[in-house]
Image (cartoon, rainbow, N blue to C red; front, side, top):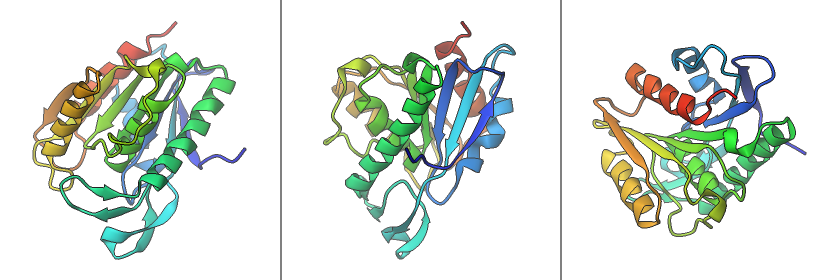
Length: 221
C-alpha cells in the first residue's frame, strides 16, 4: 500500500497513541515538527506524531501554481469554493495512515487528528466520517468545508472536538471558525472553541493548550 510521505516523531519507545497532524497550504510536514517538545506532554507519554506532506497540486487562487495542497481552492469567497473531490481524496489518504497506526498496535480510540487551515478542513472530513472511534479532532485556524457532503459516522458521533482561531486572522477570518462551531453544534457535536490575539499562525499559548487537550485525550495507560 502506498502512503503519503511523512515525518514521524516518537516521544517514547513503543508508542501506544498517535497524533496525525496536517499542515496548511504551501507548507510541509516540517511545519509543526518543532512544536512537539513545546506541548508539555507527560514524560511517560508514548505518542507517535505523524506529520504527512500534502501532494503538489495546482491551486487556482494562486494562479494555478503547483504547491503542497490538500485540495484546490477555487475562490476566496467567505465560504471558500474548494475541490471537494480532492479534499475527500486527501481524507482517504489520511485514513491509510490511521490504518497503519492500528496495524502497529495503536487503538483507534488513542488517535487524534489535527490540522491547521487546509489541513483542518481535511481533519474535519476524516474525523467525522471515519468508521472507527477516534480520540479527538483538533482544528486550528480552519473551517468546515464539507458540512453539506460529509458522511457522518456513528462511531464518532461523540468525538471530542477542540477548535482554535486567531482573532486577527486575515486569511481564514474568525467568522469561519465560529461558523464551524455553529455548524458542528447543529450537526449534534459539542465542539469547544478558543481564540488568541494572533493572525493566521499559532502561538505558544495555543500550543500549550493543544498539549493539554492531547494529554487529556491520550492519558498514558
